[in-house]
Structures are given as structure tokens and as C-alpha cells.
Image (cartoon, rainbow, N blue to C red):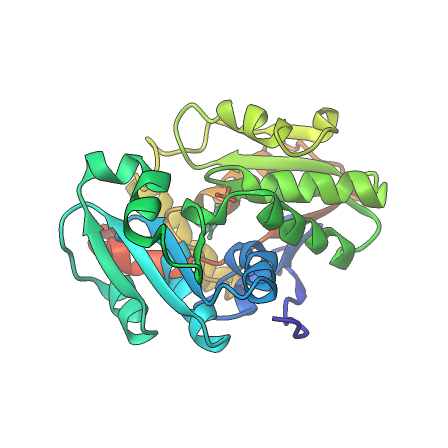
Length: 292
Ligand SMILES: *Cc1c(COP(=O)(O)O)cnc(C)c1O
């Protein structure tokens, strides 16, 4: 995937958000979206370099990661298989996976827990098969995400991102450390009890003194939402022309809006928000938008 990527910086329009720029990683690709593209970059390179032409991965039925792996494999001439958590299902995202030629194996929740075991049992004897953890977690993903920092304005004072596992955040912090930029990383966990993200990040990098966690914006937990959030997503899209999703980036921009309204940043401090993509998540929650 050694192609030039399209991820422009876009300044927000509303006067109260004038110090905010959005790093449009959602524009890299509609289906290998945002941070998933960066996380897969070195995983794909590693697989291709070692002659493993079949990626085997894991995810839920509404996983952006699965769609990204399916699309990236198809582009690079690789096979893909996914163990999908739970009962046989059909939805917009799994349809895309199948169109890209991914083989789906639905797996009950108990069996799904032992991912290495599943891989060994089904593909242990296949020298072409390459294990890719759920969400692509691991050092290659961290290194891919760290590269984003080199694309930022040098005077970025505050960098914002959403976190699920924290792998993307770890990469960004690592990038900040390595470039020596005077930037604080603000992370908005989308799960309840988001404090765990700190330990996840510490597995990959130091520099945790530059990390600020905002744990109050989970809206009840992973993939939970509220009318307040869906209404915000609609208002923000109409005002700025930027779509966000209810699982990750909607919560991120909501948090930013709330912190701005509290006057937490000086007017001359440049804020950059990473739009990590994931817009297919809107289709997983269509009915939640009926209040709009
Ligand atoms: C997967 C995903 C994340 C979470 O990334 P982590 O590295 O697991 O923290 C954030 N935003 C979007 C849009 C995603 O699809």
C-alpha cells in the first residue's frame, strides 16, 4: 500500500471552533477507513514480504476493521477470512465484506474468546495464513498510526482522537514523542471505564505525561448512544459538512465541543482532531437517528 494518501486538514467554519482543524483520515478511503488504513499498512507489508497471502482476522458483526481488511486484501491480491463473533447475521457491513471476497465464519461467543486457538485449529497448517488480531492491534498498527503525526502542522498544541482499544492513541503519542513536538494528546474513550486506555498506551510507548484522557463521553458504553448524541451528529454535519459516526467520532467531536464551551483552550492554541472514519457505523444505528 505504498501509495500517497489523501488526508487533508480542514479548518472548522463556526467562529467558536476557529482554532480547530480536522485531519480528514476519513477521506483516505471509504472502506479502508481512517485509522484502519494506517493500522493495516505495515500488517499488509509484513504479510506480503513473508509470502503469507491470506489474512485471517476477527471482529463483531458491525466491525469497521473487518470491512477494511476485506477491502485491503482485495486491493492487494490477498485472500481474507474473518471469524465473526456471534450468530449468523446479515447487514450492510458484512455484505461489503462478502463483496470483497472475504470468507465469514460465524463463531459463538465462547469459542471466539480464544482467537489464537481458533486460528491454530482452522489454519495452523496453512503456511500462507497470517493471524491479524481483532482491530489489527499490535506494534505494526502502532507504527502505522505514528506516521500521522509527521503530517500535522508543527505548531499543533492539542491533538484529539477517539479510542476503542487505544492502539491508535498509542501510535499518535509515540509519533509526538519521536517528532519532539510540543503537543498534548487528548483521548476520548468510547467505552465505559476508559481509564484502562492509559495502561494500553503504556504497553507501546512512554511520554504519558503528554496524555489527557476524557472519560466522561462514552454515552453509556461501547456502541451506546443517546438522542443528545445523534442530534449533535446531525447539527455538526449540517453546520460543518462533516459526517461523524455514533460509535467513535461523534463522541469525539461532542467531547471537543463540550470542552471548547468550557473555555479549556486559549484562542491561539491550534487544535487538530483526527477524524478516524468509521462512517459505515451510521448504518448499524439507523433507527437511533429517527429522532432527527
Ligand atoms: C476502530 C476505530 C477506532 C478505534 O481505534 P483503536 O485503535 O481501537 O483505539 C476509532 N475510530 C474509528 C472510526 C474506528 O473505526
